[in-house]
Length: 385
Image (tube, rainbow, N blue to C red):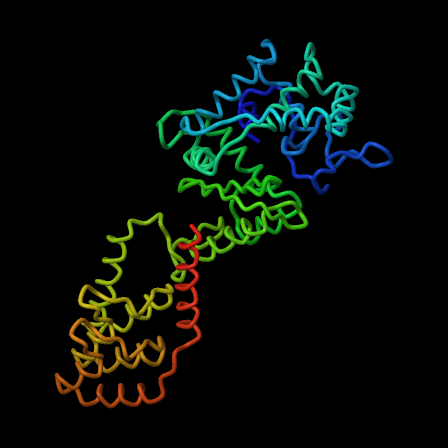
């Protein structure tokens, strides 16, 4: 994936990057199978996230340099992406890959027969570099910085250095979104809607474009080769925050939006809501409710719109809040008063009658139960993090 991001803005090969329907690690079918799922008419592999494409990409790195210089070049780039956080190399993994890589050698010879390698490139040298890059080690910390670099348009958030071009980042994230999770890619794109890349080590690298990047690690894998708990974490994350590509950023009240300046926006929302209740503006309250605003928001005194409407004696506002919005009538402000207490204090008898009848029949709605469950899920998620 990372070598593909290095080559994207410079490659002269006119190959299209497309997902494959073949499961990992069966990235090639030579005998008796149609190659059209993975190859162009000229035999060039479509996808750099399967073995064949990754081997070809490895052959394009610094073609005029020797093997050591090529590896150092890529490792330096990875270090820049990781903000000089930990970046290691496992020689044991490298030797194991070389000794047991019969499938990759077969793919290499097939690619050579199809003339996929540039002129003058040694196939065995390309495979050696590929095996070396498969043996690079990162920690969750350094991996998350690399993900954050992608989220930040190719600029490392730690060092401020521009490592990748915006075009390379865009293409890399598109690849991760369409085929970064093996055969789960389609379902992951549907449920999570974010670019991600999994590994058989149990790691998942997740990118929230323009927001953040993260890496989680949990070795137990599902039948598709992805971290079981890692996938679950990503799904829960998107259920709490409106990070999904197609989440509504304006009217998704039950999800948190860290893109906004929380305090300023929240304060403005509360002020608008309570002012509408104070002035008896039912039309404004109806607009707020239709935009999925939380009608039980509190101000600095823990007073809700129902408190304000009850204190002012606005019968129509109180009716709207209890009949249409079904707000909680038992919320206490910082003095321990509920809305009924305010109506009694200011002698608004009609409002008192409405609130007494509503309190007698009030039961928490399903929406409030869901909100409570989401709050518990948020606590569980924070404990996981």
